[in-house]
Image (cartoon, one colour):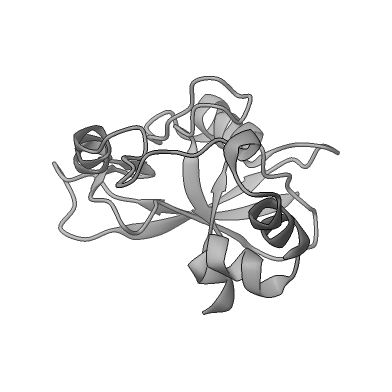
Amino acid sequence: MLVLKVYRYDPDRDEDGYYTIYQVPFTEGMRVLDALNYIHDNLDGSLAYRWVCRAGQCGSCSIRVNGKAVLACQEEVKDTGNVIVLEPLQVFPVIKDLVVDTREAYDKLLEGDPYLKRKEVYCRPDEAEPEDITTSRSSGNASSAGAACPRALS
């Protein structure tokens, strides 16, 4: 039996959020989304959470499991005997229970250009000098990876 501690909040009734404990039968290979569906279908039909594709593509089922942001449809549940804490993503306003309002984030995403704007004319590799290509191809070390991803070095 799994023990899940699920964040609950209904803005129409609650001043603050709280947690409810649910016991869910464990099945080998089950995902967090399976546990949420069990709770909703068998224990508490008022639990609010999102899911659409169940294939890890849409991101609508994103929640925090034990403090880590995951896709509920992809996160496998382990029967360790420990309580599993399910919470909404912390960077978004909570609409109800595990459902968050991502509108502002999507609006900001849509404001940006979906491509890079170059300051200089692009020079195709076959037009570049061979030493330029060799230098960039032989720099397969951590510093070049860090240059590509600044967070890797921080």
